[in-house]
Length: 375
Ligand SMILES: Cc1cc2nc3c(=O)[nH]c(=O)nc-3n(C[C@H](O)[C@H](O)[C@H](O)COP(=O)(O)OP(=O)(O)OC[C@H]3O[C@@H](n4cnc5c(N)ncnc54)[C@H](O)[C@@H]3O)c2cc1C
Image (cartoon, rainbow, N blue to C red; front, side):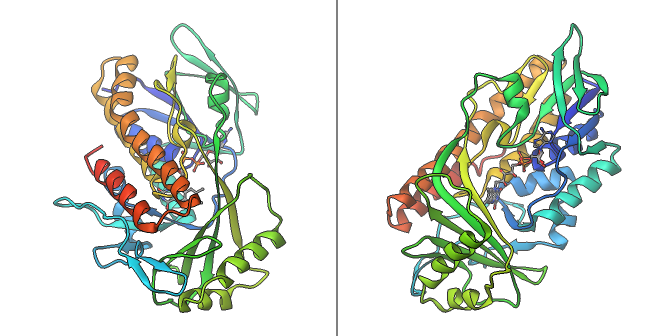
């Protein structure tokens, strides 16, 4: 029997739903409150041990059915110059016997699979409400919601992302997320397939793309931007057009031909944060981006969020009291996540210093090797 019986999970993103599914499977009743309910519509890679976390959650096969597999023949990490000359095959992914193939999942579909699995296990998911206050009591934490309802819980999980309100409530002294000096513009371009997958390095920034089974081409770019800025739709279009125009490689020119002022471009500034351990205070624990947000240079932030949920449930299931579970969780998670956050930030800095892509690939290969160990 688990050492807690009722948990509140704040945030229904990757970390929150992973925790809800995994905790439900070990007998913890979970309530999830999710404020927005509208995920960003782009693809993302789930690879390495995180693909095993998907399997442990029981949703790998379902995700795989609608995903782009990154098997050994995949060229998605190949590095090309602006003219389309091959620079390298990119960071080395480490394999192990029985390794699950990494997947390029379409985030709305992916969150839908996680949500449905959580509901099937009896998780109560409420959309459109937040937590107004958390009050530690003698044998429970009392949560007050924005709809006025109060409920006592054995355990609270703050999985509310980069700008976590739970972190602000429970760790008011925590440093604000730091800006990385880069922004990303992503686009689900209309199909068909474009030959020459991989990452292209040019004078304005880097662009990578791969094809997804939804009949679209996932295009992700990273551009240096000294200050964080909120760009208008027209400014994002202008910047992305300028980026694609800076390439003479045929795949980039083909993507440029598909781009129109109406294309749905998603622009994010990259921030990162790594909360010093422990990520818990009283009965509240932070997981996912709320505790350790990273730039996507390694493409592992979501994977770490998935692993957090799975490891949390393992720790809860094997401990006799909550503090013991939380100590075990920190022991297993901090170092692994530190490698991802610090390597991603270092990779972002190398890119801004215009270091050769091979230097970046070497840094990321080392980090990928380190996190190829079981979580
Ligand atoms: C451009 C970009 C590309 C990326 N690509 C990849 C990739 O390829 N692979 C990868 O593994 N990772 C990638 N990441 C990182 C990944 O998106 C994050 O690490 C991951 O989404 C973290 O999951 P999370 O559940 O912790 O946080 P989030 O995904 O941010 O989810 C938090 C949830 O909490 C909700 N919420 C927020 N505040 C409240 C509140 N007060 N009350 C209730 N709910 C609240 C939000 O609506 C949201 O649904 C990328 C990130 C970016 C920015």
